Amino acid sequence: MAKAIPRVGSRRNGRIGSRKSARRIPKGVIHVQASFNNTIVTVTDVRGRVVSWSSAGTCGFRGTRRGTPFAAQTAAGNAIRAVVDQGMQRAEVMIKGPGLGRDAALRAIRRSGILLTFVPSATPMPSQIFFTRQIHLSASKGLELPWKLGGRCLKNSRRAIILRSPFPLPGT
Image (cartoon, rainbow, N blue to C red):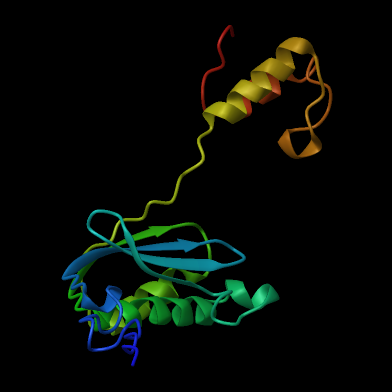
């Protein structure tokens, strides 16, 4: 008579359930990236390892509905629900991007019962330095600038461009 082979995950070989649910995470970081088209919420532990994530697209929103505040609220709720079950009590929130879902996601996080310790905005701000450099290069070569940046030929209107620039141009 042959021995019965124990099944994987049975009580006989001592392993019940998955390892992910056994991990307790008291503190973590919630990253919210809100673009105009989608909102992505990622929850990590303090070391940066992803514990849970969700986006408006994975919640079932398609097309222009993904960029709405309601979609961001739903995505944040889905991402946080899994982490609250693992014992997260405190979190830092990093918000990035110009999208409509910024505030709605933050409201959903506050409603979940997690204590927020730090809420900076990590949105990168555009600088005028590249714009000024582009104007200077175009002006020195005598090229035309696109209509949005000031239009016309720059040989004759260099003075107007310099007056419009917030930074002093080199060589003037």
